Image (cartoon, rainbow, N blue to C red; front, top):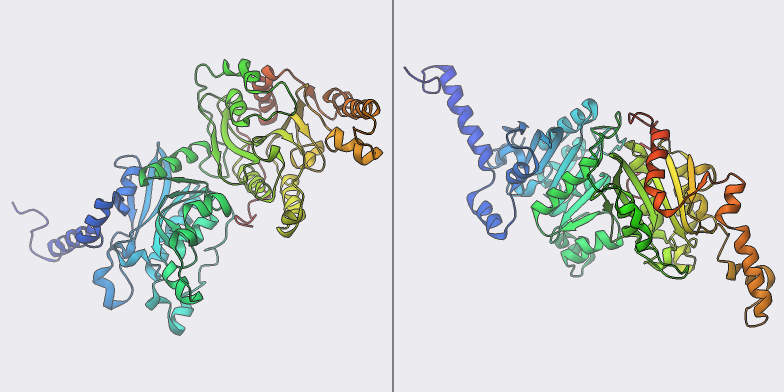
Length: 518
């Protein structure tokens, strides 16, 4: 008996054509381009999806799409972007994987429709969207002339970021145009070293400004992880970048409409809490690694820091406490003594927006001497950045818990969850809530230097310090508890139980429209 594919008539002919077109789409660009990627150790668009998604879970849409322009229709399998849905650790996810072997994965009328289809489904049905970026920018013939202008801006939601669902970008090669735009709109961005992200390529930029430009200088991983803060992490290989994407998504809910899932608490998570003082210096003038303190508090192995190379005087970390996903903003005395600079302000604000948008309780671990003041900060809008932060924090509806470890000075006291900006606060006995360092305070308030009158100077320092102690603040019920450092983990877990209830806490998301880059 003949198979249906070789049977005579329209059905058989259609099935033969379907098989041919599917094979063409699966073959992507050409063998030479695919072989060159393999030789360089770089995954192609479909291999990236195979690595990212659970085996056998990919459900492709738009496989047979091609360019709308007849002259390149036969050279545009899947129109340069592989789109669809699949699962990551059993959780549904929308995916767009740019195929650079097809006209540089350039943006076109048709593949724009494919992206919109996946993005709309993720927003409407409630699951994350992952963009695997590598593109040359706009497809010039599609965008030139009056006809090209007419297709731009037809989707009013294309660049609207309302945070219905987590949006993640992996930058895995040359990223210009749409890959850059989605990268700048994403909640989390990971980048392969050697990739670039910029408005236009170094070649185009060189022509425009009439001077040579290196791709790494224009938009490489060091620039974006250390200077712009647009990229959270850089890694050596495609696989490592995709692993970072998986890890990040494990902390978040499927959408803003639900709370992150509770996870089992690893054995031994409580033991490290008892040794927390091993990582804390006896002298108030010595620095310490706040990341080690965080690891003593959270569930074992759960700390996942965001933007570790940017704004280093604050640490922003996703973690779990008692199996619950949380966001932690911690002072970092190892960098500038914990003084908060402009980059740290931007980093803190974006992290607050992330946590409030996706129902992650916020925890502040505070040891800050105030904002880093000076001419450079003023030129970079420091006052505006401080107020941006305050504006965001005042609109937060997820639980906010503040714990002061040591210094908590000046206006930054409010930015780090002081006063009415925390639902519950606590302090270690080492906490100091002065407006500034007591020695500086004596100099400013009394015009006195220690060498002028050591006895009186030390007496005034003691007086200011006593008025600013954790016990003084607790006496006014401006902090709800003074705790032994070894009790920190349990205090935070108990406070979260009170503030979150059964674990199904979902906020009001007043910050959903907050810009992703500012």
